[in-house]
Length: 110
Length: 113
Image (cartoon, each protein chain N blue to C red):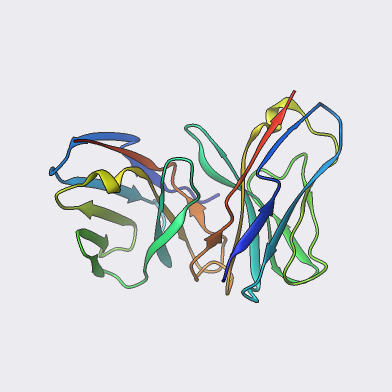
C-alpha cells in the first residue's frame, strides 16, 4: 500500500530556533494534510494542501506542497514552548484512505 | 459543540474478554475511521466507513470488528482481545472520505493483560 515517509522522527530545539519536518511519497499525492498532537492529546487538523507548489501560512507555521506533489514540509519559525508535540502528515492518492506518516516529535527547550 | 466522543477513556481488561469501544459524532459526517497509535509506528488505520452499512478494512484489521448501523455511531469491537492489542485508539470522522479534515476523539487507552 501507499507509504508516507516522515523525517526526522525526533527534533530537539532551543526556544527561538526554527524547525522543519518533511513528508515524502514515491507516488503522486492528491492531497496532504498536517496534524498536531500535543502530549497526552489527540491529533488536531492544521492545514490541507491540494495544489502543486502550494504554500500556506498560519502565523509562524509555513506549509509547502512540492511541485511534483510527492513531498511536503512544515516549517515553524522561532519555536515556542507551545509548539511542543508530534506533527503528522497524512496523504492519499485519488480516493484511497489517508495514510499517516509516523510523525515528528518536537521538543522545545526554554 | 461539534465533537467526536469516545468511551471509555481508559480500559484494562484480560485476554479473551470481549469489549466494545464506542464512538459517536454529532457533525453529520459521512466518513468515520478507527486508528491505533503505538510508539514509533504512528497512526495506523484499523477500519473505516464511508457511509451507513458500508465498512472497509484498513491496514491493521485483524482481531477487530466494526459496525455502522447509524450515521453517528461507529463502535470498535474486540471479540477476543490479546496483549498485542494494547494500544491507544482513536476514532475520527470527516465530512467526506479522505479529502476533508479528520476530527479525532480524545482516545481510548486499552491495556490487555
